[in-house]
Picture 1 (cartoon, rainbow, N blue to C red):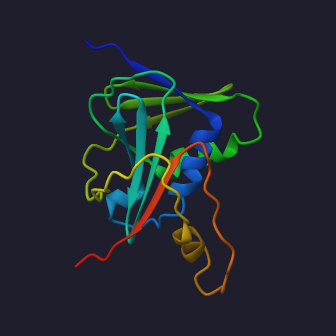
Picture 2 (cartoon, rainbow, N blue to C red):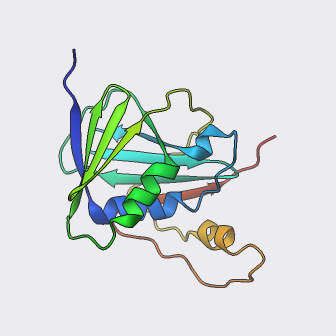
Length: 170
């Protein structure tokens, strides 16, 4: 029997990651757009990814090295609202406790129990850009403003390494 794996993520980083990933359209039947793939990019960075017509990829620095052996596939319909509801709370971290397919997320007095959907698939292989690459997230503005002729620019949070990539499926 293995011990649960736990790690804490800074509140600002997870909020920024969820904001970025929420810009990827959810499509029924496309599991890569419904479940956030969460895995170690390397021992000091956590990668969270969604894919549909475009892919969103957020890399969050971990406070200390972790060993997450297999990717987790967390339901965006549960995780994104849980994080959004905690924006006004004072707790500075989100604690993730992984025990087999079960993931408990704690933030202050709140707790969410999630299950990893290991059958999720279809995630894009995103090229590994250099740390600190500056990009403009036009995809966010385009996705959010279809038909609204918006000219605002999306901002890039400093707490994550964001990437949005458009692609065409054939």
